[in-house]
Length: 425
Ligand code: CAO
Image (cartoon, rainbow, N blue to C red):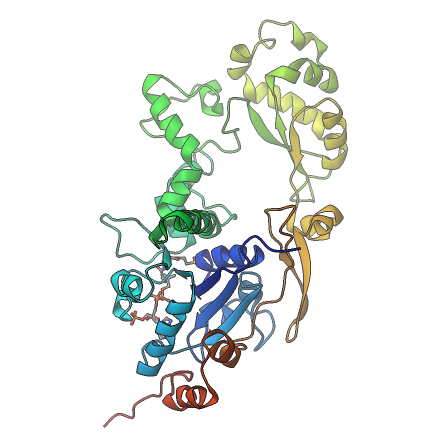
């Protein structure tokens, strides 16, 4: 079976997390992804959060599957020649360098476009044009500046960052979509274009419902927030709403059997209006089906603490999985809080390839998250990440067509070695 992006070649200048998630997805769809890394160092994540000495970290291996690695000093004159050849033979250049790095390297958009007018140049930056455009950005900076942190956490606590990497992996997804869209447009125009995705924009896009609430606030309190039922006035900005649901159906995280010792013995429970009567039966409050204080959603909004307190009395008598089974029989929306341990051991996620075991020559077997997007005609095989520079000669010869003599010249030039330190005079 063929792969959707077979024949597309990517010059992958990405590092850390945001960019590599994008190119990993493209590689899973079949693109030939050539990761260009600094000689001797490589992507900095190879050596970060290492669990085994001198072995590529899980941080790196889990973000760089299915790619080939070439080391190249792009500040060396011969290195620049090799980079120019790569630009000529690739369809897309993807980068998430700090602002201005590509220009300082001597490869601004205009130059790349003149070398290869069909090339798509795709970039992730922390911010779009504006006061912060020159700033370097990491995940939590994006969460804080994109509206996520100010709306996450409890009203009386600090702003919180989430564990899901919405700034990095979220923006990587946006860029991947931009790239395939530009590839599609190129089939009509024959031209490349610039594609940019900023991490602040990406986070704000995911925090869209909170911008919705910001505008609703001008017309009165946000009645589905617990704060409303508690009689606490709203300020002029959307507050943190704890575990309240972001939609129109009130929800909460509730304790389940074992919560005293298990930090994940909880379930998310949604009091969807359509199944309210079933909820009343399950928790043993049939009288609430007709009682004017509970029967209709607007009446319940003022009593969410009391209602969820009563539901929790019931969930505490069940494990999260027992509660899930019982509630799902009645179509009551809920979800157990699954730990990473439980997800790692989940056999259904293994069966779909969402959790995969990968073998690596230096670290042995490890688990990774596979392709979250499933296509019936472009299946994903997850292949281990490359060692630093593992494919340098292969790329010089097979992709760029350099002769033995030329390859020797490139080696002799120092373009494939770490820059030599010049002794102080
Ligand atoms: N050969 C020679 N030099 C190379 C090279 C190569 N193959 N690859 C990279 N370099 C050089 C660059 O040219 C640059 O040099 P100058 O600063 O002298 O021009 C240098 O490496 C550093 O690049 P950088 O600014 O991208 O890296 P950093 O570690 O200082 O910053 C980061 C990292 C992530 C903060 C920054 O890249 C950034 O803001 N990126 C955009 C936002 C982003 O993607 N953030 C997500 C990070 S994951 O949380």
